[in-house]
Amino acid sequence: MRIITKTVVILSVVSLLADVASEMLYPVIPVYLKEIGFSVFLIGILEGVVNFTAGISKGYFGKMSDEKGVRLPFVKLGYLLSALSKPLMAVFVYPLWIFFVRTIDRLGKGVRTAARDALLSQEATPATKARVFGFHRGMDTVGAAIGPVLALLFLFFYPGDYKTLFYLAFIPGMLSILFIFFLKEKKQPVSTLGKGNFFSFFNYWKIANPDFRKVVPGLLLFALFNSSDIFLLLITKETIGENTLTILGVTFNSDTITIGAYIFYNLIYAAASYPMGILADKIGFKKIILFGFILFSIVYGGFAFNPSIGLIFILFSIYGIYAAATEGVIKAWITNLSHGENTATAIGFYTSCESVCALLASIIAGALWTNFGSTSTFITTATISLLVLIYFLLKIRNSPTQ
Image (tube, rainbow, N blue to C red; front, side):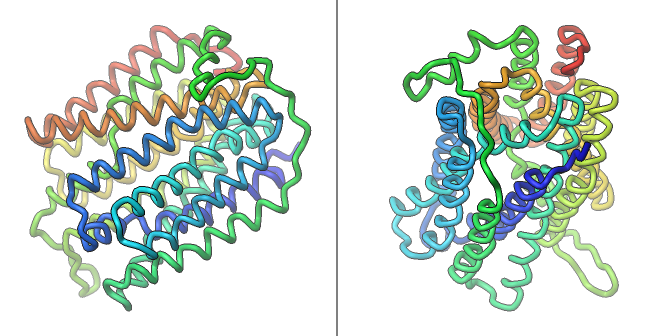
């Protein structure tokens, strides 16, 4: 039986192109916002609000997808909203408009995520689930590596021309939507959970199976201290300071080394995702995820003690393997523990809660950094990840779905 089906390939290409569009702008949005008058504090509020909006909406739209028994309309609308937001960033510079546009972008992610992952789940069996999600995550992350490279090349030749870059990001965004039209909707079982208000997806907890109720709290505790990757980039820049790196006669400063390390991380992540999926399907999701938690703890512990430039790249490579061992495998595990007719609701429930925890994690990390220094932030995070590992070892027994 073919594991990587046409639907999986198309959805993976769609994610790759959409990530090229998003990651082209990721390194420049903070710079652009400061240029048009946003303070660092206002940028923080903006990103917090829009990411919270995306996060909490994943559960609502996931439940709606199950209620209607369809996936593709949510996938199309979600990617369309994100694509349209790219050029709109360059139209006006008023703060209220920027808030509106960034919310549209992140809302697009909220609309599509659960329905898309439910489609991926439908294309796999419980025994091949991690490979399918691993392949998708790998392709998605290839886009995340290509995007910043394209942005750096463009800005090298056209420094400071951020508005044109926003327009260019619209191209891969629209291409991603065109690929969705090659997909055909299969008949879906309709959810039996019943209708409700915006937050009714939380009712899934009442009907979730016992393993789901054990696994999700552990994952959310981990998410509560897994702050934004921006803190890794900040500690990298802080650690490097005024040091430079010369390769083949070309000298790189802290900014270029930091961006280079981030691109390197994405390349490792992309390359390792599918192999980690294969391994997870063979030996069990829990073992691979716990292996990922150990790597995560090593990375955060390593960054706490002023690593050299060489060690920074080693830590980012380990971080890439951690991401490959957890991101796709966790979604595979969640879908295996969910009810077939409520798959999107289960994914939405988890990803909504995870997004809220991620927002709180960044607030906690920022507070620790501000009051006690960067070392305390990374030591605390590394310690909590080991405690989560102990929780899984004690509470979660192996089963066919784990």
